[in-house]
Length: 163
Image 1 (spheres, rainbow, N blue to C red):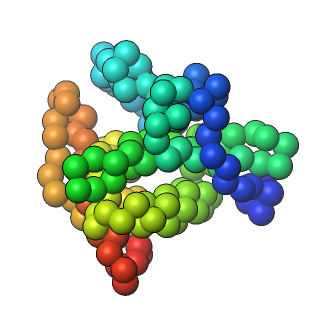
Image 2: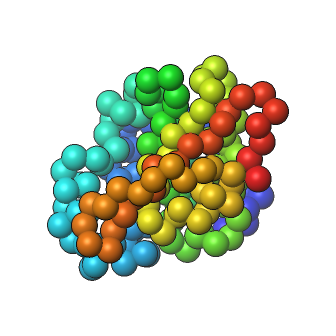
Image 3: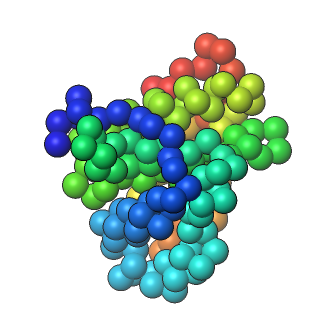
């Protein structure tokens, strides 16, 4: 699938289950279901993207002209900031520049909220990506031995550019 055949569209609440399945495939790419099955089960029960989330928040899909979903992200307002709640790509799309494309789109959308910064709760395997994009690591939170989420922030003020 050619990168120039891809475009963003708002997510449809009816595709919540398909987007969660994409999330699980992406997590599997990094070995999380095998290495941390209890955490993945807890995420599935508590953190799965839902139709209500899509309806209530700024959620975008990156898809091909034939409708094939390649990735998605979701932005949710939180106290004095916006939260990049989800950002996942199909495993075969990881490493091809589409993460940067999704990031740029998400940052542009986040800036329209009027908030001064965006929070990212990062998968341990994505901390380096977000740092390369200009986000700053505030701290890590250990959820299990060998699995630490990064709490990261990106300034959104005018003139603050992603890397």
